[in-house]
Length: 350
Image (cartoon, rainbow, N blue to C red; front, side, top):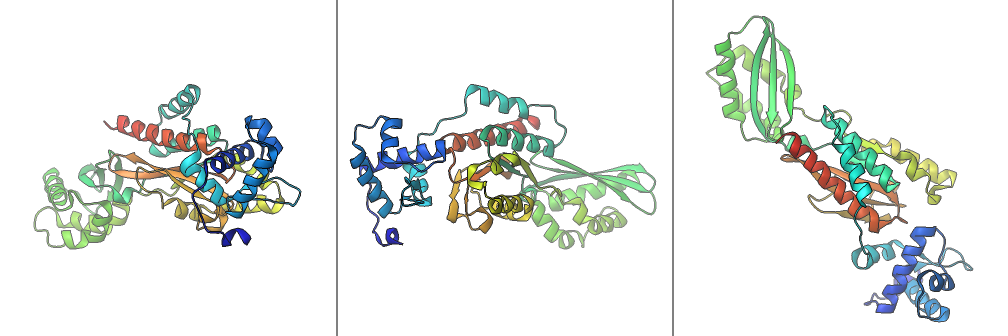
């Protein structure tokens, strides 16, 4: 409570150095940090007494706290925030880690969800936290064309393409056969009316766009209108891929049974994770620390996320772990996997 009454001010160079050392020591050991331990670990040319006074000042400013009277200090959410915004020295993945990521993503997978599953697995493995990949928001995708193919007298195969390169096929039954010319003329009018619209716009306006059609086959137009929910729904049932779930539970912060139960509830609450990760900004790294996470389940965690691209649509990728996280490693790691995933899809459909 006392720290909240102190007005923020610009930290001195010494305070920045001590705060950085406390964060890095605590991230590495998970133990409260004392002044003598800092001198030994970082070879500081300051006396323990000077460091202790500086840590007292940082505590009053709200950057550090003392879990117990006789214990050292640990960073607060505010301390971590200051650290990641201006003190941390980020270092990208090692060559071995980069090679492992690229190897996992370059496997000959047949479907988008298999590639995304591989991405979440390798991200969780290298970060030693929970790797999360949300499937692309395909409703943002742009309709390119529809093709209709007669499979039998009563069956028509609809092939829908969006500009990201994804293709969806749906089998539709019709009461009697339709000629090739009727299929082509129907396709032509549908493509003229829907081309360039997002899938969301198609689903919301297809009735009004096709009700006054005077060319093509009326029976087929009606069938397409009745089947529009299936035809233009590119969202999958899975939607979310988790990798390394056991990693987050293994952190000492979650050793208490109540903490474990809370983390397990988080892992089971797919809707909460999906909702939370929808907030990532395109092409930017988002770092949400502790209480800055709106969902109660994430209040003791840090969430690092960004977007990857599949053609003209985007998905979200990130890591969830304790606030005591190796930010210097994990932020560039998330960024690298995001870029590698985007490149993988670009090459797949180029």
